[in-house]
Image (cartoon, rainbow over all chains, first blue to last red; front, side, top):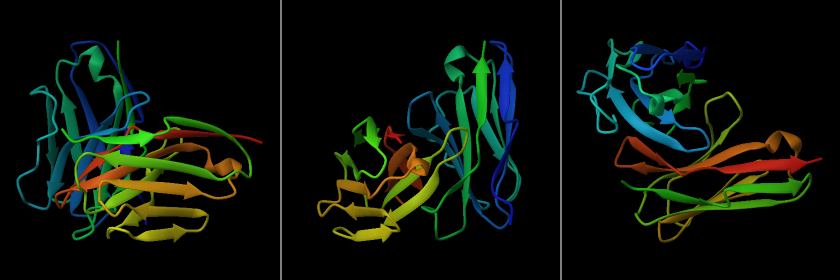
Length: 114
Length: 110
């Protein structure tokens, strides 16, 4: 079946604007993760959704970042009042219950804040 | 927060050579994973290690979970051009969160 998809693939925005990034997980995967990857760096955990449980937001860097997920489907990551340091690739991953370490990643959204 | 230290940060090798990279942590992890990331793509899982001392192979790849549970290595034998990319180690924190290393960038000269 289809893998994890993300949109848009690239986003250029002006400093101070809000942006929304979308993730479509693999069908049937109950867990969904968002990561940030700065240029030349590893992945930083942002937020984790598991079924109907309260999300783990411990990785969100500031209150400008928020994410929602509808049931076990699409998730959106919103960054308000974007700053230049928000420029990065934002990766989404999903996994099935009981196999959280086998996360399947989407191709990412490259965000550039000018 | 917890960090994983990967080394080397980059490698330049000739096609056909063997490659070795490792990952260390100040904390214990109960699961170690190795991912490969190609340009413009998300990371893809290569090998998962669940038990201290475990040695696991996947084709030309071999990875080991250190006995102290604070380190892991990945070996690639007889490298080929498609091995080019960035390799990340990751440790499973608790039941759900992955902590990633900074990556090892592999470049292969034909």
